[in-house]
Image 1 (cartoon, helix red, strand yellow):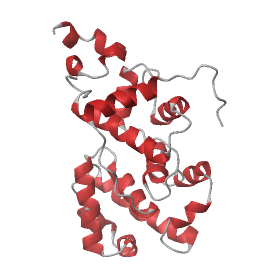
Image 2: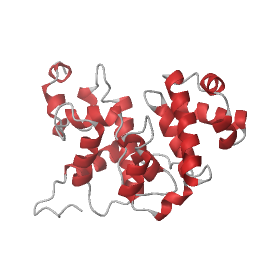
Image 3: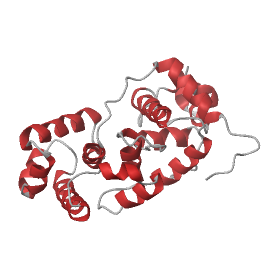
Length: 235
């Protein structure tokens, strides 16, 4: 547990309120059971959100149950997830993870995780091949577990580095630790989810990887990178 600092860093709250005013309140998430969220998050790396959604829906329609997906040949799983990035690798990881969950729990379900502390859940999840802090955070925060965590994707890494909230080249785990230390203590899991979504939207629409729209950015006044950019100088 982090000790409450004498002078709390309020930048994350200010950034959140600014993005909320600019983009509006994000649509409410459809909250899934932990296993479905695990499958989605395992497949989502380096893949657009809409494509991953379509692939997960296709898996449900094609196999009918997660047990049938688990028992399918790797080649069939690979073909079913072909639209995502690295389907060859992820098909192997997915099948192996579903088999291991069944072996360890006696049933293909992650509902039992609700009885454990968040840190224990994340350590357990990260034992599976292909699962890091981003996926474990997504499972505990986005699913029906609804725990305090902040899922850090490539948009968050880029945006927070440009804002000077984390050191250059900080990874997802370090970035999450830093942002969670800055997040208001009264932010619920749902608020942390909302913050994740706002930063993601900002990274997709304004603070893009190439040619960021710094001159139109609602965070320009607090962004060192934006203030120093050539695009701002050409306004």
